[in-house]
Amino acid sequence: MKNENWKLFTPFKIKDLQVKNRIALLPMGNKLQSAGGEVTPRLIDFYVEVARGGAGLVIVQAAYVTEEFGGTRLLNSSDDQVSGLNILAESIKTWGAQAAIQISHRGYRGSSARSVTTLSVSEIEDLIEAFGSAGERAKRAGFDLVEIHGAHGYLIPQFLSGKTNLREDEYGGDLEKRMTFALRVFQAVRNAVGKEFPISFRLSGDEFLPGGICLEDTKKISRALEQEGVDLISLSAGKGPETREWTIQPMAFPRGCLAHLSEELKPSLRVPILIAGRINDPLLAESILQEEKADLIGLGRALIADPHFPRKALEGRAEEIRKCIACNYCNGKRLIMELPLKCTVNPEAGIRKTMAITPATRKKRVLVAGGGPAGMECAHTLRQRGHEVLLFEKNSFLGGKLRVAAIPPHKQEINEFTDFLVRRTRREKIPIFLNCEVQAHTLRDVQPDILVLATGGKAFCPSIPGLAKELCATAEEALTREWSVRRILVLGGGMVGCEVAEFLAMQGKDIVIVEKLAELGLELEPITRKLLLTRLMQTKPAVYTKSEVVRVEGTRAFVRNSKGEQSQIDFDTLIFAAGFIAEDPFPASEMPDGLDTYRIGDCLGSRRILDAIHEGYHAGLAI
Image (tube, rainbow, N blue to C red):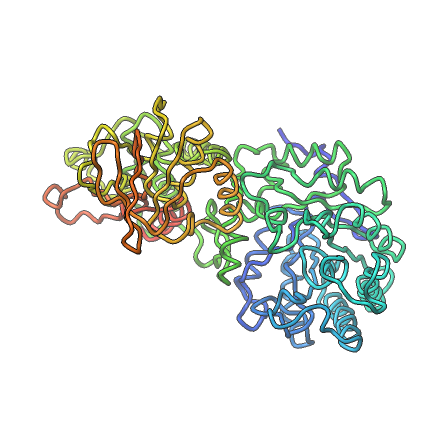
């Protein structure tokens, strides 16, 4: 059933700009531009796919108004960039979306060597002029709207916040004076683009930081911008890096977590409000509009996970939407590492069209052994390319270790991704053989052209002298069994170990964590790590870092740290949470001669969900 009568899919006007629906792609960095900050074919492909997927407004990531402090970001700092920006804008509009671009400056976040207070009045005036010039170039390049970035702790909010603006001249003091720079930037852009061209201003509704910008401040700032003639307020939250979790909300945050900010701001304004905040479900988006908490819905990571979210929702195919799970790998860890966009659940995000799924030159019979994330993604890709696919799974269900990964606190979002993979596999009518472990006779019976091994790995359980088998368990067992014991020693303080520790601590267990590295959870995405460790430390576990268990006597573990010092820990159960190791289900002697074999996922060793999905996808492309 189509949902064309939903408010989400009604046209909307921003000034005189008609947008076909109320869905906007939020401006997110993706590192798909060139090292020199120029538009690339890969960047164009990303935004075109979102436009093709049905978004009404596509807001291109922040383009920096000066090369200084631009870093490896998209630039809108000279006329040399207009041609590339024009190709980008026109490519977006080809698919019926309106094209917008954000303009920004990093301020002191661009360098540790400077701060807001070092800017002279002359430098400030130059920056105001740079914003105006960038606005004019955006209009000349063919964009339909320009957005000024005044959120997340970049240059403009550095002036707005009393925590960072300590100036004593006309640009500092009370909030009214601290607004001077923002308002002059807006005026410069307005003068450059003219009265009829729509301008959006992005603000953090609340920085959630003592002494930072709060919602009452944002109300005053928004009203001042409205008086100056702003056409749209785009509302976000947080300040990087201190409260980045409110900007790029992790799985632990509820969906729609910022809608209360727009709901409170809305009565203060006449101009429309666009709201962000972990909106990854069309029903949630529609409810925010129906309850008049906002006028437009901003989707960020949700359109990375599935750029066709709008079209699928419009056509009543919400169950086919690949929902963002808020793992933050795309917009957290990758950006911090200055790496191009990658998505855990969508292996096609950020790649060139030339690398996408294409029909196979020769149809082959492929047996995929293993119905976890790697196996299901591979089976889907193979089926899309026209191969004959048979999917074997030794358990009575599909999903593999994803089922267990969703058990720890705040990880339930993974269940929806698992269900999506299973629904898609069944919808494509891929033959599925449950409770069927692939063995040598299976290969003889099926006679595949290609074998894909996605059979998973086994928990790494290092040998510890004196440890009795009945006293230990794996992380998977820790999450799926009832435990009557009281004191549990978790061996491994990475992601799995910390999640297991929190899960068991919430059941009232006394937890001890032993970790070889200097800190816990080092492989985690920073925002998720910060929140997980905060919650975990509140349970008061005993933590031994730079340490390992060297032997056990009965129920006493002897732990040695990097200095050679020893400690003794009494425990009831020891949990191995040190990852997985490869497990090859087929000895070489049992492999049919000449059978091409691909190995993906945990059967190669410990893998993240992202690794499993991407390896499954690329194996499917390679066959």
